[in-house]
Length: 70
Image (cartoon, rainbow, N blue to C red; front, top):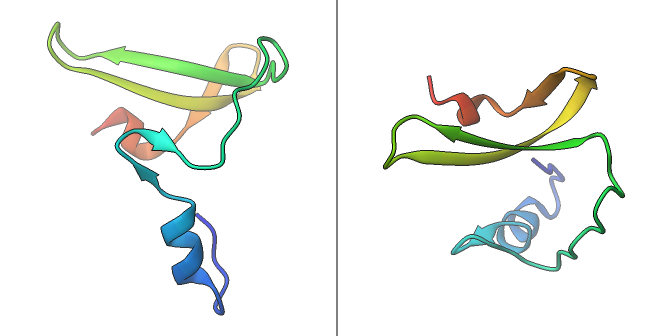
């Protein structure tokens, strides 16, 4: 989350997602960010979540708390 007292409203409007799309983003080349991870969590056949995170260790991924959903 970005915080700047003079422009926090502008940032919240322009760096948000709408309909699953990211504004002003560019697709990364495969393997250009080897410390990033993509998680697809299946809670049931009909309910899946997709989140991203980053590698803390070679087998540990840090992600947002809401990704776990507990």
